[in-house]
Image (cartoon, rainbow, N blue to C red; front, side, top):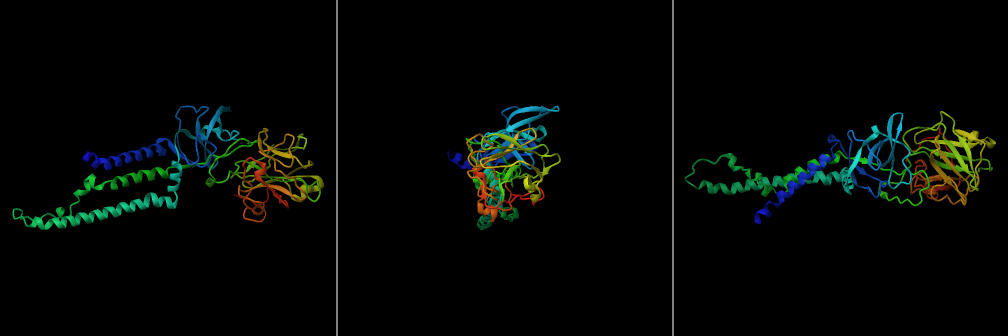
Length: 431
């Protein structure tokens, strides 16, 4: 029993070393794996915020519906579930969706964009690894323990030297050994080979290095919210510390239904992405208070919206489009208790907003914005979930864009007392 207790620290250390090596094996890209930290809740409850997802590329094996895959989308890595696949021009594309999202992702995923299939999940480990990649976390997890190891080993060396000094007089008194003791015996480091004297110190150092190597190979996976239609009934539970949901698509950012006269209407769009987007053939449509649908404008060819920039439609009545230098125009008007929608050229929904009383079916996300607008007032999309009327009009959020999108009109917009229309030539704004 004493021998077992004596060997226990060494055995536990060996186990930890094996676990560390195993972690590096499954996380290192050289073995075809990727370790991804999940930072939002679009895959809950299957994958939670802060989990570490391990993915592996499928060699000569097709991905199938139900698989959770990680893929590149612009400058992000996304982990979503496959709904199905489509064959376009002889190439396979996958339709994906977050489990917590109401709608599928707006863009198909090409096979070349897929990093791999998720085959293992380690709950909460992603949060720990993310912390070790900060300055404070790196110091606590690596530098401080390493310094302790060095200090303890230096202390051990001096103990051994003092022990040898204490033994030397006894050796000198023995006449049968007249030969001078060799220097190697004076400073004897043989004790360092004894695993019982070292305990956890040396194995701990061995554990530290592979864990650090594995941590530095971990990427960040930003699963995102991508609903484009009504999202009532969805529960999004991403932690607040990971930020507000920011749209990854063009949004309707500001609407005015009257200026100094009732005929001065405009609709402003905002592009929160990092790329310019071609709007050729995209459509603005409206519904009146009775729910009757009508076209506002089919956007002309060769029209685009800059990255983090704006695009403006204004009515041609009273030459209001000329006054605002609008990017596109038509003779349509907006009114109380209306709604508008933005659709792609294939009629897929991109964004929608309703205001006032919406008894009849409208273009709406969640709950309609509760108020109608008076002269020169407008409803404007927030920059962040924390944005207010003050911060959006005169405060810190005035130049942070309009990217906040929780898929609820009443939550996402504020009422401006004076509108601020911006077109494609206006200064860009980033969150």
